[in-house]
Length: 394
Ligand SMILES: Cc1cc2nc3c(=O)[nH]c(=O)nc-3n(C[C@H](O)[C@H](O)[C@H](O)COP(=O)(O)O)c2cc1C
Image (tube, rainbow, N blue to C red; front, side, top):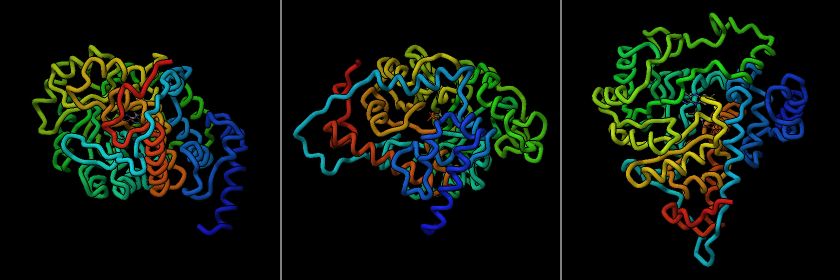
């Protein structure tokens, strides 16, 4: 994009940002919205990508992205809880070239930053998960694909060029689950991630409901029925798109372990005793997550849950954490509290909505750069040097 195009785009975005629709549902102030940028490189932090995407993504789709549950208390807690943990620096070390690489199940990755499974990515950009896969490939990040993705696992795995992990929802019953598992296995996924935190369903997403009401476009052009149905989702092919999830119990985890050749991670664990049970039932890893504040109205930040889970099972299994990570220091705190890797959801989707593949790449670049600065600031030449001694609870 040349500078003139970039400038007029910026003006257009400012115009959009000032519109009542945008400001009412974006959850960002007009001052923040004015931080919208014209090219990915101009984004100083993740929030510049958020401001940019807020001016581009249609209101109801923005509502789907932004929403929490009820009054969004868990969503807010995910951010505020980070402030409870403060950092202690170790001085006088050579931190000119910090090493951000990690090993996950025997595979080396340049950073511990993983792309969380986010459904329906064509709602945010025409290229959806394919743009995300190309960005993940360009920067070599692990990508997780949602069951309710806009593009099937075969195409996304091909675009990524290296194995992706598959996230499992149980919509449509056991046979539909098995069909999904066979497709993921055939596409080369080494790990299936069972999401277990949606027992209460998605009916309390008030921010989303309000945004849908405010969107004057004709949703039936793309959606049938109530406008938010899952019809047409490739990984739900052959099953009843809107059927309820199967009841998830520990027996289901046993059954899944027996049925698949993939390793099994459980996503949505927020307690130490549940983490213990995951191990008893053969899970190969745990993802501490409250679904980015979208699953329940607990009001508890995921970083606090991580502390509890790591105390229970840390060192015995692989632990990922997500929900609320926006800066390099957040990543640093999660690693210090026992995570082996972290995932981001909305931050890379803001990049996707703003600029497609280059926006996702910029989001990953910003977070990586910020993690490096945090490692230098707090005296950690390598990821293994980050530990509980870096943290104080204020
Ligand atoms: C729009 C949206 C769709 C999501 N879809 C899924 C999904 O299909 N499966 C899943 O396990 N998690 C899903 N998540 C949750 C993410 O995997 C992740 O847990 C969460 O986004 C992390 O929080 P963050 O957005 O604050 O980074 C979704 C999150 C968002 C924002």
